Amino acid sequence: MSIELINIWYIVAAALFIFGLKQLGSPATAVRGNLLSSVGMFIAVVVTLFNQEILSFQWIIVAAVVGAIIGAVAAQKVAMTSMPEMVALFNGSGGIASLLVGWAALYNVGNTTFTDITILLSIVIGGVTFTGSILAWGKLSEVMVSRAVVFGAQRIFNAALLIALIVCSVLFCMDPAVDSPYLYAVIGLAFLFGVMAVLPIGGADMPVVISLLNSYSGLAACAAGFAINNNILIVAGSMVGAAGIILTNIMCKAMNRSLANVLFSGFGAVKQATKVEGEVKPINTEDAFLILEAAQSVTFVPGYGMAVAQAQHVVRELGELLEGNGAEVTYAIHPVAGRMPGHMNVLLAEANVPYDQLIEMDDINPRIDNIDVAVVIGANDVVNPAARNDENSPIYGMPIINVDHARTVFVLKRSMASGFSGVDNPLFFGENTRMLFGDAKESISSVVAEFKG
Amino acid sequence: MEAVLLGLVLMLSIFLGFELISKVPATLHTPLMSGANAISGITIVGALISAGAELQPLATILGAVAVMFATINVVGGYLVTNRMLSMFKKKDSDQSGGQA
Image (cartoon, rainbow over all chains, first blue to last red; front, side):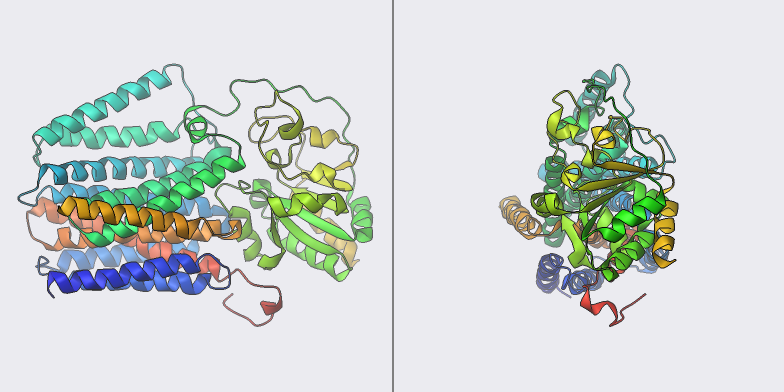
């Protein structure tokens, strides 16, 4: 196939990506959108195989079969609670692939300086994406400590690292060769930089990091596209890059923090929140059942704790029982609940909660005064009224779901430890708050049993 | 000139990406992200060319490893997105089935 014809097919593939992404915008068409996008990818791969530069296929076949098996098995096996880890790993493999494509492009003859710069960019961005994603995976799966790791000379060290990376990059571009020592230096420094970039970011900020790494993996592909002069890589890569930036921005807004603040400061290191004093009012499952039975409207507010306790299925069961009892049931979801954007929605969808019951923060807050019972399950910072009232709180200014305005609030909690960010929560001491201590799944199960019994 | 044209393509694609994504509701952010992630596996196209071009043994090896990683990204990304999306159901269609 001639290069012209291949390029025409690439346009078709790009169009399919665009329609696919567009249809991902609504739950009703999203499955088809993903299918369209995968057809686009299939077309792009197949026509590439007709490229006359490709002379041998044995390595391609072996590598593709191995990759496809690993990818397919991983996609089938992964639990929905572990989705952030999975996406991080997929991100990482995209990043390393772009690095390798850039590296291999050095063997092409007659590269211009512009090409060499883009090769370098694909190596650097790909490398940062790779190790950054691996580290994010480590933090999310708790293979390593998930809190922010901060040490004294961190900023100085990172600045030095960045300067070294830039110097080596310039030296490499001045004399680009496959065996240049600066090439290896750049790869090593990019790897190190990826690690250092994710290290100071705490577990609660992971939605931002995942979105940002997603963006990087797109940009790496885009740079690789410049390196090998290929349009489809540029188009698809930059669309993904833009998509990741938007999600990053949405996540930052939902936490009322700037991207720079998320990236460079360990959470809550500066201010000491006003100490909260008061008495908590515990409640047992029988009383909780009686209140829920009398409620006309109930909203569940899930957080990462629901994922940890694997409570989503019993929550849905309780929701159905309440509906059967005549109550209006909704699920209010904060944009940064969980460890990646939209994480809670996927878990509840897995438990068969219809998506029209999933309500966004901005839609629930105006009518939360009329909600009889708000049930907070494993969420903490995203319902902390200190974000509204206490100017000294590290999360002051972050938009929250105002559960404390509901008529009654149940908080399901293992114990009185503070949340992920280590911030005290005045909600627990509220006049209308009742604490239901214990494992979320067991507590909800006993309430369900009361309903049935 | 070539670089300028590619730059134009880049700019338009970024704007298109912004337009397409900013309308997606929060409910779908996770599948959107993994779907976009699968698209970023487009780097497989470059990997295929490197792996098959027989430039030098090392370039072939780099390309082949890239093909493997990019395939993980593409196949895994699309399958897991599909798995997630097929769980999203509207209230009335609960009984109508769909994959488990």
